[in-house]
Image 1 (tube, helix red, strand yellow):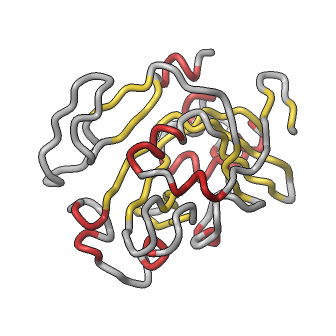
Image 2 (image 1 turned 90 degrees about the vertical axis):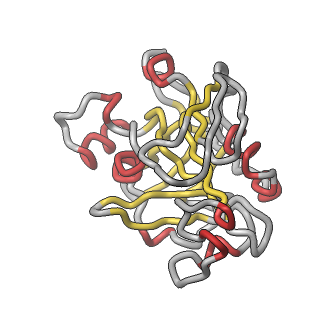
Amino acid sequence: MHFCSRKVIVSYLLNPTFFETPCMELAQLLLGKNIIHETPSGTLAGRIVETEVYQGPIDRAAHSFENKRTKRTEIMFHEPGHVYTYQMHTHTLVNVVAGPISTPHAILIRAVEPIYGLEDMWINRGKNKREVELTNGPGKLTKALGITMKYYGHHWSEKPLYISEGTPVKDIESSPRVGVRNSGEQQIIHGVFMKKRIHMFQNLDKVFND
């Protein structure tokens, strides 16, 4: 267990069976869990506050749309709980593989609340960043936490990069996905998941100002 002045991080690794949960439910259960990265220079951790679902076979925005199997998407066809990383421009983005074997679903981690190792996060992201800006985007959080492409194919239940139990989340909301067009019709009612291709998040203003 790690301690800091603001939070207590329960760093028990999740059982791999946790990731066998159907992806829409898993995307919600991931909220409040902690991403922990144990590095040679110290431990970094963030609480997951925003996730985004990609159901490859039917999702035009997914890399694995229509079960497209390539060198990049290969890990998505493996057991759930693996790490799927990919590059977008100059950023690394990180996902949780979330479907049964041969069903390439993934959940993008869109934002985390920085809770441990903030000094190292500021070194990674820049001393001029406000705390809320350290990890409030998928490319920002990987840079802050030191997550690189080398973790492609790693499993989220294994050190040094893993997801642990965290703090239960309240006030889960839903909205259309960010910056994604032509990926199928989406009808969202606040707090109710009406279609599958959505992202889920906790109110970030409340989270980052707890």
